[in-house]
Length: 78
Image (cartoon, rainbow, N blue to C red; front, top):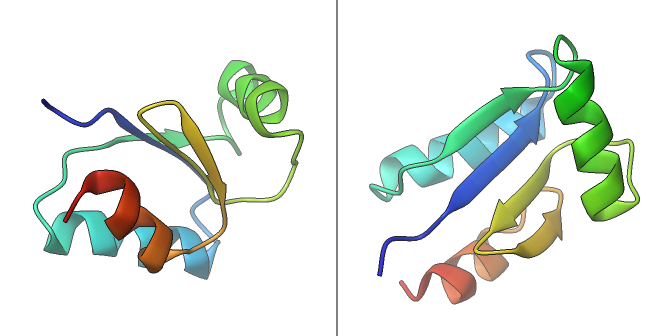
């Protein structure tokens, strides 16, 4: 099964970059939404997570707030 991974991030967020680097380094495809520019995706992020801070990461429908490689690994089955 292919994982569905969405990253809600901003260009200036160091934890966002760390999360995206984690996925790249582990060969995990993901879709990155820049919520600083995309108001619809920003609203979607808030609706999904209840959070305005980034990163918010959606792995197969599970919402993770922040950079949590231990949780990423668990949810991705790596």
